[in-house]
Structures are given as C-alpha cells and as structure tokens.
Image 1 (cartoon, rainbow, N blue to C red):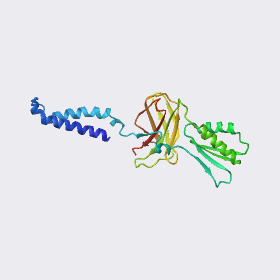
Image 2: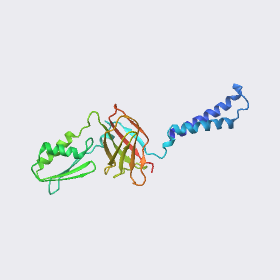
Image 3: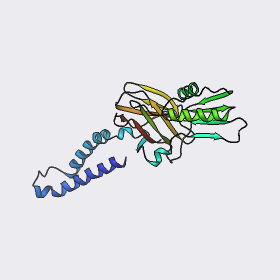
Image 4: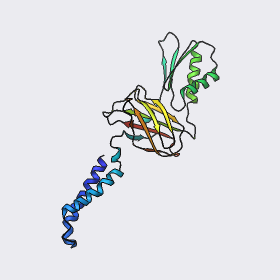
Length: 237
C-alpha cells in the first residue's frame, strides 16, 4: 500500500513541477493546474489498480530464504515424552505426508511390540513398548522426510495483523488448474504443504482462520527454480 501512495504523491509532484514550468515551455495557457491534476488523477486510478490496490483486502505474503534462521525455525521437530508411562514420541512431517512416512517406517522397522498411533494434521504420536523400536521408527521417518526433486513444498507461518501466530487455521492452495486442501497451522502458526501442482502463475493461499471468512493471499508463482518456498502470511484482520 505504501508503494502505491508514494507513486501517487510522485505523480502529483510531477504535475506541480510541470505547472511551474509551463510558462517557460510556452505551452498553451489553456492548460490549467486543475486540468493537469485531473489528468493525473484519471491516470492514477487504473495505475493503482494494476499495481495491486485490488488486493488491499488480501493477506500479505513475505518470502523467507530457505536457509535463513527464520525458515529453519519453522521446521517440525521430534518430541520425546520422557515421563510417559509408555515410551512415546511425536514426529511432525515437513515434506512428505505423515501417514505415508509412518507406513514406510513401520514396514522398514517391523516393530514387534504393541503400538498405538494417532495422527493429527501433519503430526503423528507413537507409543511403543520397546523404546529402541520407537527410536528406530522416528529415525526412519526423519530420514525419509525429504523433498523429491520434482516436488513443490510451501512452508511458512500465518500471523494476525499484530504479528501473533494463528494456530488451527485451515490452508488451501488455489491455482489456475488445481486446488489442494486442506492443511492446518500448528500450535506455533507454522505449516507445511507438499503440493502436486504444475509450475506457473496465479497461485494463492486461502486461509480459513474463521471458517465463515476465508482470506486469499496476494498471488504468487510456482517456479521450478524455487521448489521450496517459505511464506510469512500476515492476515489483514
């Protein structure tokens, strides 16, 4: 928004400067300051629309560098419940569907002890009588949780207008040819979306912090040169 306001001010300043120099340039005396400002205003309206004023009510997206400390802090981690009666661990997936991760890990480790497995969004909580088998399951999931070369992954965090994280918000990827839904933000507002979508323009995230008022982000592109993108989404309300 600040960019567009600055642009309008610059146009106004240019109009004022042009008016001051009109006598020197010996232009027609019929060109008044009012007429010149009217022309500037008429030109500014479509220009402002084309420079994204039409997205004033959308969530704003800032993109983080993949290797930045901020981006790394948004990765899901392994949690070990040291004081639980039964050995318990939780794993939050980043690049692969968590159910597929667990199935692959279970088929590799083949645990013999009793298991209890609970899935929630991109997180799995595993209880296993054998602590060594539990460690092996988690290690296998962590090893397998890698982005494939031809896959797009959108990670990031959703915050409100005050910069506070929003947990439990549903997120959809809306595109010209595809729609992927739905993922949910974690307790810290972070999320990870492995998506099967072609590269191209016109994509947006749809945030449903309030199910009755979904909010779209400003549009962005999926480019094969940036297969992993980390977004900081700031809601307007």
